[in-house]
Length: 193
Ligand code: GAR
Picture (tube, helix red, strand yellow):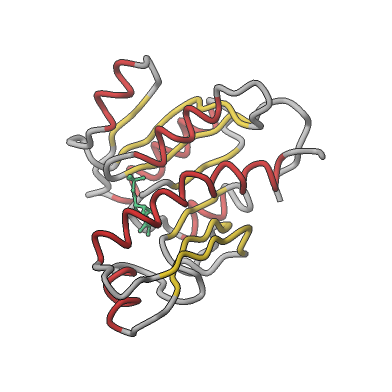
C-alpha cells in the first residue's frame, strides 16, 4: 500500500502513446491539494507527441525503447531509486513490466485500463466489448501485480455502449472518463480525508 504522509508523492509516469492521461495527471499534480508531484516521465516511444509537451513544460523525461527489456528496466529502477520515486503511474504504457521490476516497487505501481476489469484484459478492449454486444464498458484504475491487468482494483467507471458506437467513438468516450478517474483514484489511495 502507498503510505500517505500529507506531502505530495514523488511520482513517475510511464507512457507509450499520445500521453493524454499523462498530461491530465501533470495538470492535476499542479493543483494545490493534489497528492502527487510529477517528477519524471518515462516514455517507451521516442516519437510520442507527449515528448514535445514535456520539453515545452520543462518536465524531466527519459526514453527507453525496451528492446533490451532487462537492461532498460535495471536502468529505470536505478533512476527511480536515485530520485526517491514513491509512486509509478502507468498511463497508456504498452510494455509489460517484469515480475522483478514490479517486486522492487511492490504496491507502488498503478495502471489505468480501458475496460471494466476483470473483463477484457490486454489489448483491443473496445473492439472486443462491441463484438460481444456488451451494453457497458468503462475504465479501471488498479494496482499492478505480476499478472497482466489483474492487480487489486481501486476504482472503476462504467460507460454505456450505444448501438452506433464503434471502437473509435467508444475509445473517445472512455478516455474522457479516464481523465476523471485517474485523479480520483489517486485521491482515494493517497488523501488522508
Ligand atoms: C488509454 O485508453 C489507456 O487506458 C490505454 O491506452 C490509452 C492511452 O491513451 N491503456 C492500455 O490499454 C494499457 N493496457 P493516452 O496515451 O492518451 O493516455
